[in-house]
Length: 512
Image (spheres, rainbow, N blue to C red):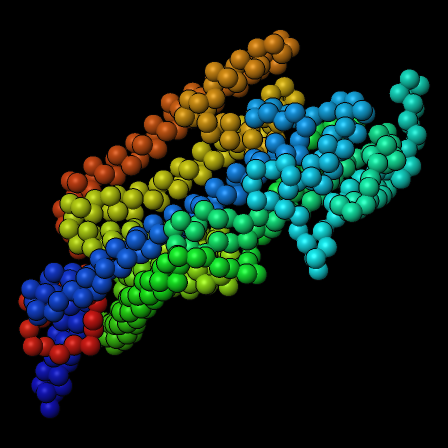
């Protein structure tokens, strides 16, 4: 009776080893062992192909939308900013007369927009009535300033006052009063409609665009310089009436929807297979943990539990969910139900990134091709510890540069611009220009800037980067020289079963 129990125990232990060994086999090894075709591998190859094609098609369509928005933004600058030229620097006015001339110029251009523009922009209409142009000024409620006597009296309360200008009603700018001593800002807002017709050439129905154009006269500094800025927000909507003669838009739409449906079907199938593999791993964790607890009187470690959870499957599951969501959103965009190009591009781009990275999983079965992933995984703890120290030094230089050099150099005017400038210095991009712009400052600032820049470049370019590369290099060399060894108890337990699973063995663990 005892021998029967021992024999049964040995059979169950052998069976568990077989399941574990089969679970951790590569698709090629499973094919050689049991003749099981690597369907998941084939599916991932098909998926990466169709998702890439989908991304390219959407990218070409999205590119037309982006170009249309950017070119309209540029045209608004030339239409509504007086004497505007494409140049770097600040566009500003300095005299009261210039402010009135610029406001009058904007109003006249807006009222005569259809006669002036070479595009298809027009007023936005609501119930057959043109939307008015709004002129809003923000100013202090009470201000009395005497710079000659060095005296002032001011109330911090801010008041907003708006005037609405209609195309059917005349407006004289000379009747509009501006108190420049109290003025903080003046906003001129317009609503302009446009239609992106270039999509017709690609058998796509055009979209209608609603641009909210705002010209801001910024006088918050009260420095004698009023900065003039133009902002443009855009909302894409479905046109109220669409008719394209002699176009294949309908057949193109059906073809794109069919292809997106194919992508959704393939991704759902991939999602089911990966979730089944994760579920099989969870069942094996429970079975192996129970065996170790009963037979050896101990619990398995968290590291051993993580060996059952295939991170590549989790990555593929996330990419499949993102792809399905993006494809559904893309179908809504094609059918003109939505116009969320930005959200769709983020989801689709991230999903494609994860799909391509997920292919490394299958290269990981070959040690020579998997050296990059192994090196990154082994070097990650040391690299993170080293990076934490480097980030602390980097932040200290950012704060110091912002406070000391900010008043003297535009690249250090704010904390985030200082961080960008220092990061560019590591690559050698901003060193000379920074030296040049600080050349004419005071002697104290000049000496400090030299010490600051020299020390930063020396520490990060010659020391930090070199040490970081040394960590990766040492890890890589160690992995190259390292022989295959069994590290965990789980691997030792599987190694005791040397024979491959029998071709006809029935197992419920599928992890191709």
